[in-house]
Length: 341
Image (cartoon, rainbow, N blue to C red; front, side, top):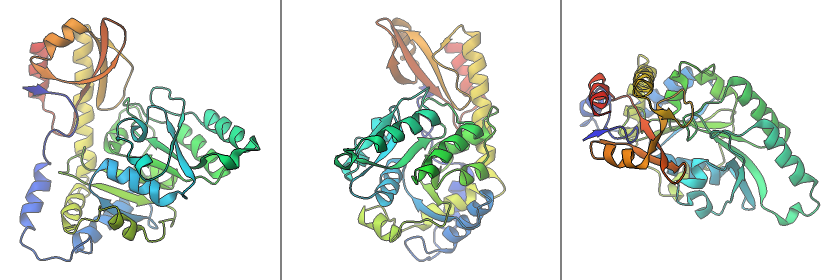
C-alpha cells in the first residue's frame, strides 16, 4: 500500500547501510568510545560552527527528550512547552515519569510566542506563593513543530532573550531538524540553532538513519555526570558504534542536508498536487508535513488505498489528516498518489 503516514517508515539511507556493513566486523570500543563516534562529533561541531559543543548520541526521540529534561532540571522544576508540544501530548508522560511536570503555554500553529512566555514567567515570579508551585526550570520547543511550522530567526532570538533574562535553558527538539533547515522558507541555519539555544538534538531516526539522535550541548553546559545519567535511564548503547557510524556517514559530504532537501522538494510537489486536486489545507506548512481537511466519507475511501495520519477532528463531518514526505519519498510515490486522488 502507498504510504505517506510518517517520515520514518523506511529503514536507512543506502549509504548509511553500506557503511554499517563495511564496518561490521571491525572490533571497536563500546559505549560510544569508538573512532566513528569521535569523527561524527567533530563533523557535527563543524557543521554547527560550534567548536565548544559537546555531542552525545542517543537512540530515539522520546528517550532523548526525557533524559535531557531530567538531567537539566532540579527535582521541583518543570519544563515549559507549547500545549501541543510532543513531550506533553505524544510521549506517554515520559517527562512526568521522571518526576517533572510539563507546564503548558498557548500554541500558535505549534509555536510559542516570546511575549506569552514572558507574561507567564512575570506572573509566576510576581506570585508570592510561588514557592508552593512547580518551578519553571527550562523551556522546550521543537523545530519544526508538530504542525510542520518553523520559527524564524527573529522568533528564536526573542524566545532565547527571555530565557536568558530568567536564567532558563532553552532546549530545541530537532527530531525533524533536517527538514526545517532545508525548508525553502526558513532563514534559520544549523549554526543559528546552535547559537540560539543551550541544548538541541539533530534527529537521525526521521532523517536517514535506522535510529539515533545527536544531542548537542552548545554552551559548555553539559550536566554533571550526563553519561552516567544516560546509563541510569537504560539508554547508553553498548554498541555505540552503530550510532557513530550512522552520523559520521550522514555528516560526510553534506548527505544529511542533501537528503533533507530531497524531502522538501517532494513535499513541495505534494503540496502542489494536493492543491491541484482541490484539497483544502488545514494550515500552511513549509516543511515535509502537509495537513489537509477531508470529508470523513472521503477519508474512509482514501484510507483503502493510501496510508496517512489522522490528525484531529475539524467538525462532525471533517477531519484534518497529515501526509508526510521523507528522504525516501520518490517521484513514483507522488505519481501513484495523483492517480488515487
